[in-house]
Image (cartoon, rainbow, N blue to C red):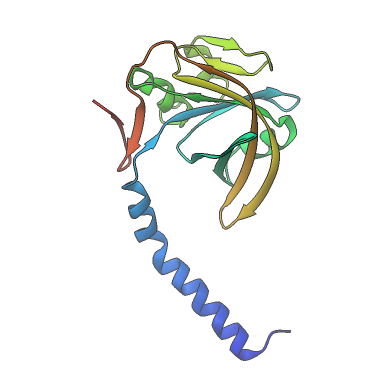
Length: 178
């Protein structure tokens, strides 16, 4: 059992976090981020989502961190499949980002029908024309607040031979570097 001062402190912390929620989101919306479509195909099926919360952690071994809302349908699929591909999108691929963000009304399966896909050596799906394909396997995960954090060790990398501008997300809108 907690004491009255402990309960009071916990309430203050909860109130403070709630008060900061919207200003925090607005501040994060001011941070431009690259747009990626994460795909997985395996025992739990095929699925993909658009993400901006994709961050390199270390280059030895190459590891990337993905932050995904715990309500996302991809969570249990990733936890079972474990293998995935991070597709870094170019500015000409905004339609792909919109499909996999659920902005177009397509079902998760229909989203795959509108684009050309290749498979990497790991068998994971690559969006044709993406700036980069980073294949990897989830090696660790934990939860914090509303999100799951997945650490993905990269085992295959394909970089585009061309250099079109990247697709960015800034102030809740898709943007280009140009």
